[in-house]
Image 1 (spheres, rainbow, N blue to C red):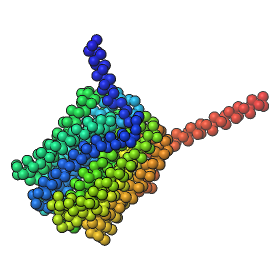
Image 2 (cartoon, rainbow, N blue to C red):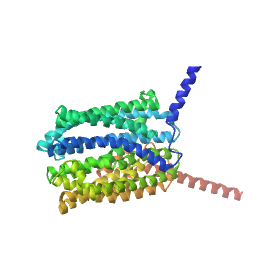
Image 3 (cartoon, rainbow, N blue to C red):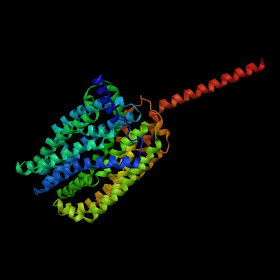
Image 4 (cartoon, one colour):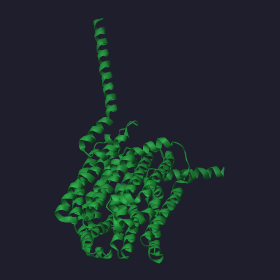
Length: 521
């Protein structure tokens, strides 16, 4: 009897951990709490990358920093797929919990983690085999290519591990346990910071030492995340409970567009890298330093896109559309305040930031230019991140795909080309910022229009919707094509409406005929 009672208590405790936490209480408080805890976790990851760059810069060779920059351009592509899978899993889990179906959450979580691990394992193999060719495609050559191959050959091994680590962190945020999600990333960051100087200098492994430290840190992150997830939801979360094909279908409807959405950013960054490469290794090194500064300085911006998803998802599942709009308002307020404060600090200490990384010449000029001028554009980048997170949780995942790819192409290539022609490497960085401003404004306006029409959030979609069309916005980022595909996806629903309308007209005619017949009698 006592054992049964304890089992019931344990079950109720586990069920309580997956209740919809964001459908009640202050939205602003939820946004701040989720963003703060997620930011700490992200900052620990990005701080590690800064430490990597710092220790590598102490070796005194520009090609080493450039090698990490080229490697990052490739691994960012791969991480985008992993990010898409984690977004899809988290969105489905949040909506399931918001709809009061917490008993299905553990099944969805296991199936999502399994899918992430298997898919990233398949991707890691060809990337490992063709590392040199991939790096050459983005412009790495000579010593820089040699160093980049050494670094990437080691870090690519950890791709399946970091994929499930990221997915487990996303799940913890989806259930409202952002503090628990933070633990794994913080501990991984500590491990990396400790191992960096040991491997790079003490063991004299140079750039390979930084790669080995990253590998161990990622393993640590996955192990700790698994332990935390088991404590939050119980060991049963790691047991197969069936429904694999159905859950893969539900997750992929968001994950495929989300992965394509994420791929747009590294596509644009790779174009920026290859464009900057024409101005020499100093310029690429400066860009690599900016790439390490940006996510650390603006971790709140990146964190908010991950933090708002569960809040929007749970409230959509609970059909509370007013709270969804409130989440957008609160997120934009946080973005504006944080970016303005951060950019002001970076402007005041621009020269110091460049000196910390031993940047000189063109490298230093690019870092200072970014800190003083283009860092402010992250207000608009943050607005697009918020809009994309909202799209992914509002049955509009392909909209974020289209928005990001439009920005990565028509919002990046022309501006970068013109900037490079007029002002060199600085003009390239400025051109990218201009595109961010333009598309940040457009996407957040669209997000508000969707939220202001509650039927967009409450109507159910046909499970037979063909999501293969999600690839088209990535290939043909034109508004006409996007509208054409939306019309095609909704064709079945229009046909059903026509049939229903015809039935109504037919019934009305029959009733009128009967009425006339009765009148004559």
